[in-house]
Amino acid sequence: MKSILKISLDDIQYNWKLINNASNGKAAAVVKANAYGMGMIEVAGALLDCGCNYFYVANIFEGLKLRKKFNSSEISIAIFEGYLEGNQKIYAENNLTPILNNLEQLKRLNDFLTVETKQKAIINIDTGMNRLGLSKKERDFLINNRYLLNNVSIDYIMSHLSNANENESKMNLLQLDELKNFSINFPNIRVSFANSHGIKLGSNFCFDQTRPGIALYGIDNFGKSFYFNSKKLKLPIKLYAPIIQIKKVNAGEKISYGGIDVLKRSSILATVGLGYADGWLRILKKNSVFLIGNEKCEIVGNITMDSFVLDITDIKKNKLKEGDHICLLDNSNIEHILKNNNIISYELLTLMGDRFHRNY
Image (cartoon, rainbow, N blue to C red; front, side):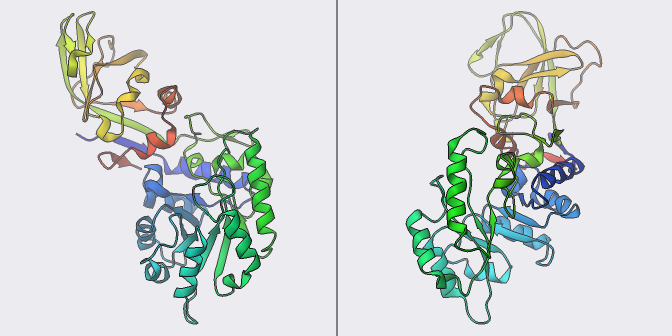
């Protein structure tokens, strides 16, 4: 039996509309990693229906999958990985927008362009994150050699905030100044800067486009609810896993690999068909306390590859049986599950793989 991930596209649309309002009507959407595990095609389609037509993905394979579904007149698709050797024709033939992360990639694009070939692109500058983007030396070179952009249609100058979730971080303002000091040299090119947390830093960070990702799902890094303009965003998902066996086990019996837990009482145990191969990592055990009815149920033994064991002894009402699905994740417990676990919401969501049945 499959676990079920129920996803409300209406809630995702609701969230994007609030984010878009906070972005002065200029929000795009980051749908990489299968839209953070929620389904890239379905999420992009829902967002297109409510007005979003600019999407960011991680690599050219994600870009091609999205373009196969949506034609070039419907949406723009920008690709974070950069303009890599061998992909030039793919970008051109599928109207995909490369993000140029260094001057070598800009040169590669210029070498490919002809009178008949026009290519839209984004220039990414590194303002302090030291991950992707033109270095200070490269930026200065480009300012002094602007002819390199003569034949390229630059859609945006962009950068990425490294500390946006820390409102008081001085790094945010330093990066903002770096971006302004560069982009002022190209006054006719639009600017994209703020991610989900960056939007909350204020309109100065929003420029001509924002790039929300995790906020589309209503939560921040640690599973806490996002608010924009005092309105709470919605967590659009609920995760249900099947009970694949129920059995009575005597007090003193050891549970799972290595017998790491010993029953202090005779118990009714349910083996749940979900494990770390589904993204429910072993590290989550200590916070995996589930409410069934009004009763708390805890995991005994390890979370294994395909299953874990849940103590359901105290469930008196609505007696559970094999084949029933129980809710493991929703708005009531996501923050608690992540708490003090050295795992963030991005990881939890993107680990939800193709073994789930996604119910929209």
